[in-house]
Length: 251
Ligand SMILES: Nc1ncnc2c1ncn2[C@@H]1O[C@H](COP(=O)(O)OP(=O)(O)O)[C@@H](O)[C@H]1O
Ligand SMILES: [Mg+2]
Image (cartoon, rainbow, N blue to C red; front, side, top):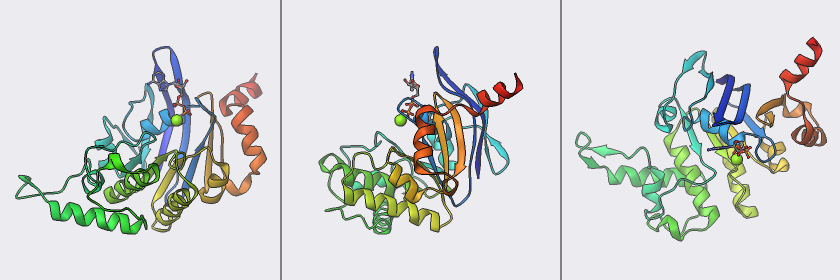
């Protein structure tokens, strides 16, 4: 469903992502793995329109796309659940779920509050999220509850690809379970998921495909069933970039 070709992202003299090519297949869960600083968040932000690539291209269904913002990505069916939980603290749950996509009526003159509430209710029901109330401020909620709102928001926005950067990192066990169940659910609806997680147990449970980064390069792109847990750990810690191997063969 989405392919990146030779993507590079530099910040000044730091190369965060270097010549990365990989695919996210339709209706499958792809896990993006790598140690801290491997470039995972940077790659994801390019896929979500937050960062513009320094070089390279992004393709959706065989058509090259150019994104200037997260709004552009959304229009292309890509929704993101950010690592830093981009929620507005001083707004309630209903408002946060519709962030970036507030429904209007009267030709855009008025916020459609009823529709906004319905969207929030159905998104949260869908997630089985037990929140005390839809009217409480996000600032008064726990990490897991905030994550539930962020994911519900991505689900409410719809789309063909949901991107999650460390969705379970700050959560308790039950809340982690809820997030993993949502990932299973999205896949069963034919929606692709790109997930970053440090928890290999979670990755092995939900992912179909793995993309492993090291030092801003792809060291492996494999199906989860074709690799052992230990080999994945080795690749994360000491994998050699694919193109470096090819260069070695050519030499
Ligand atoms: N906005 C930025 N400005 C400068 N350097 C950055 C920026 N974002 C990321 N980097 C650098 O790029 C590299 C990859 O970072 P990141 O994508 O956050 O890795 P990961 O998510 O895998 O931990 C790191 O060396 C990081 O310091
Ligand atoms: Mg990161």
